[in-house]
Amino acid sequence: MGYVDLHLHTTASDGVLTPSQIVRYAKAKGLQAIAITDHDTIEGLEEGLFEGEKIGFEVIPGIEVSAEHSPGSMHILGFFLDIHHSPLHEKLKYLQKARAERNPKILEKLNRLGIDITFEEVLRASGGGQVGRPHFANVLLEKKVVRNFQEAFDRFLKKGAPAYVDKFRFTPKEALHFINEAKGIAVLAHPNTLGIDQYSELEKLVLRLVGEGLRGIEVYYPEHSLSEVAQYETLAKRNGLLITGGTDYHGIEKNGLDIGVGRGEMKIPYSMVENLKALRNRVSGASS
Ligand code: AMP
Ligand code: ZN
Ligand code: FE
Ligand code: FE
Image (cartoon, rainbow, N blue to C red; front, side, top):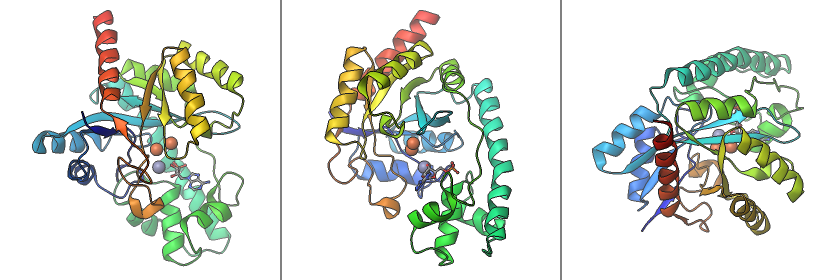
């Protein structure tokens, strides 16, 4: 059995490759399956699924939803979504609207800081998908306002920086609810961004989320240390949760992480897809 990558971004959010390109790239790299998991949007899925069918490559329709959480950030992955589920479309439309209202505010703040940047430039940088802070960062980089992508976040765009504007997020409970409603399998993405160091505290949170519809944990992730991987694996196994893994590939030119392998160390077995499917079949069998 081969290897997979269950966390990827396309131009539908802030990735570099279009959905078709990422599917072809994954196949060329010798992977057996991928999940497309754009931030807060399923706009890339139809194209990705179509390309997969065309070239004979397995594509799992997914999403990565940002949920309200502090002190860190919480992202929830949804796998095997029914992309035609209309309540899901409603929720995501609401998020798009919140984004559309936020972007001009970020622009205004940057302009007030004396930076000459227009919305047209940001739109161009977004490649036609949803517009977010990474696209602002790219324009700042292009214009040599900053020397690299990270500096754009550190000086202007990150939480607490002068051009930061808060964004509406669903609560974890709401996000888990609409993922489940659309037949998605909900998995907690990269738990190391939650800002929780203590195992017992993390377990408490995860158990609460399980009560609200969480089914798994993304254990394998390029930014997880070995001890974090061990901790999350224990947490998943003790509580009967699924384990997934992915690189969060956005384009290798962005951060050096490549599809399937991350910095070269990742190997995500196809058995994780089988486990997701087994759970999906159990859930849909139980409810029909
Ligand atoms: P947005 O959805 O517009 O809030 O942008 C979120 C994206 O910005 C994330 O997926 C990251 O790719 C990027 N990002 C957020 N915070 C940072 C940060 N502190 N440094 C670098 N990139 C960041
Ligand atoms: Zn991203
Ligand atoms: Fe994420
Ligand atoms: Fe991601």
